[in-house]
Length: 72
Image 1 (cartoon, rainbow, N blue to C red):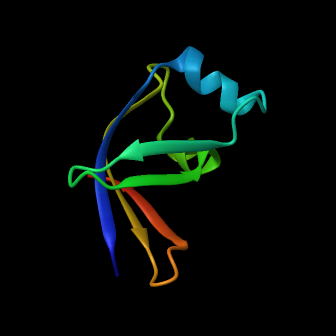
Image 2: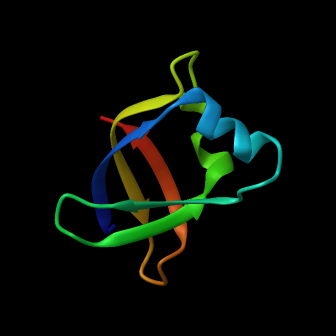
């Protein structure tokens, strides 16, 4: 399945906007220059007191539908 790798550094106060409903999706630029957009709720397993930080890999199917998000 196709994947895109990218780095995220979302501070806690910015991620709070997703919890409050002010923002619904995240847009990231992959290491290869591709831009991806996915629902912010997919980041919930990765939220810490420091926000969301790290390298991630987004997996999607041939129809560009979300399959999985992993921290790498």
